[in-house]
Length: 120
Image 1 (cartoon, helix red, strand yellow):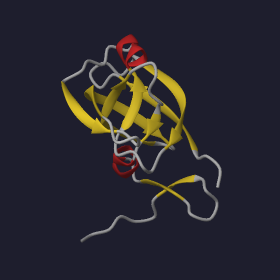
Image 2 (tube, helix red, strand yellow):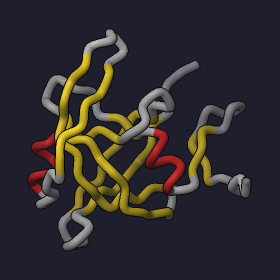
Image 3 (tube, one colour):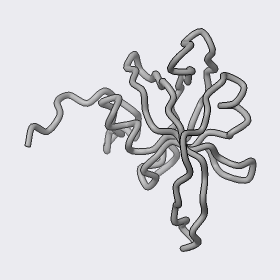
Image 4 (tube, one colour):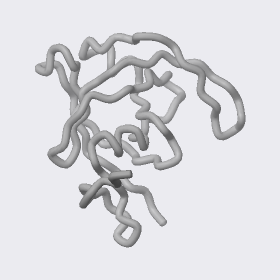
């Protein structure tokens, strides 16, 4: 099936002049976006609290979370972001995809803007 990647811009939501651009693997099995804590600290994004997460190996781990401004394909929004440790994989999760109104095209396996959102 291959891997879907997304070119993103991640900024400090308070001081949007502090940003970095990065290519992330899109992980539709991950709820939240995971970025190395060291990268987030470089742009002044601060943790708000810690949450527990269950890994694919069924282990429970705890990581800090915060908020960052994320931009992809011309869409941008403030989203929850996990402060990943150096051994964690950095991914773009479904919360960010939904918040940016993006989806993975099931045929081309590319990231695209959502045509319309469900209004239920």
